[in-house]
Length: 498
Image 1 (cartoon, rainbow, N blue to C red):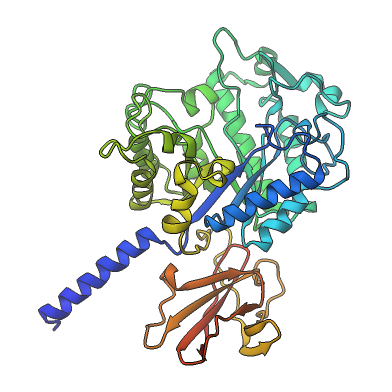
Image 2: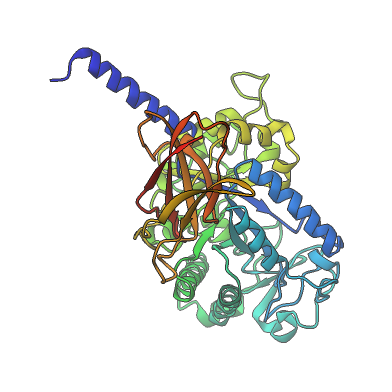
């Protein structure tokens, strides 16, 4: 039997392990949205935009960000060489005008992100065809060809979600992206049916008369969006099974007043009732691979309290990985409810990592992190993201681990003392290695791959430069392989003197 001393040591170890897992989880989605609709790239030109993005990516990498959600289709236009839609005015200042000197921002971003060990998710808006600020549509814009498929809602132009051919069109646009670009995910935001404006009705009477089939109109609108989400999910996985499909809905599903059983104790706009987005159904049915609700409010907000909402999402949306959309500006602008000398980042992160089903967060917006507002970026890099993290697992897509690396060895080169290995065998796209994890353990330290603090690199390379000093210290290095879904291979280890 275990004596009291051994039992106490075991309990202390378990508590330490649990605390360490909370502070530095080995797997965690650490995303950031890079948007174009704030005009940060308009008219910069090729060289200056690349310089700006390079700086942002370098800073985000230092902050431990491991996924970039890059806005490439804000209004049926493109920040890439689309086969269907015109170049975006948010890139060149004039819709339909290609960049000069010519380049493809999406292709460039994929290469830059992958070189830094980051995923790149192409962020599109499915239905919004014109924002309020756009004055002129290019001759190649789809509205010019099929105006009957759209409706005006105030100054916005919306592709009618009730038409089956419109779902097909959006899936064709996404298929074009998938076939020509090595993206890791397709991401859509919170714009489904338009956000309601006072005094405006959604002008879909004719579409409802044609396709409503006697359904209640609200239920019919929700079913239109449901059909689209399911079709897009199936389309993505039919073309490239490893590409993740994610959504970032508005932060309130339903208020308690509207739904006493499933609603949150909030008083605000509702996905289900106002945007016709039944997010819980998409999660339950497995039509999305991850969910990032935009919980942008502060702790203590009178109508939409962050604490209330993050607990609600944790309880109700655990069928697929749940990440929390964090508003950097609001987080650092609002005081901690207990200690007014601090802002709310510490308390929000503690909540995020303590609740079940929450497997990461996404920062709105990337430039706020890069600008280090309220020391947000500093806190990520020095504390919350101090150690690297793998992506959360998605076994419903793929759970088979790749084979282990081969011929792990050390070699002196003109660049220094290097650890080399060969990629594992495996030729199919789902099981070949895409990245490698390098762990380091001091002499006598147990080989435990569950601690993130033991990771020294997550790299696409088959080599790692060792920090050699005088050869007096003994270490064990471990290398594992990761496939596209970041399933991890068995370990291969080597003892090294540094």
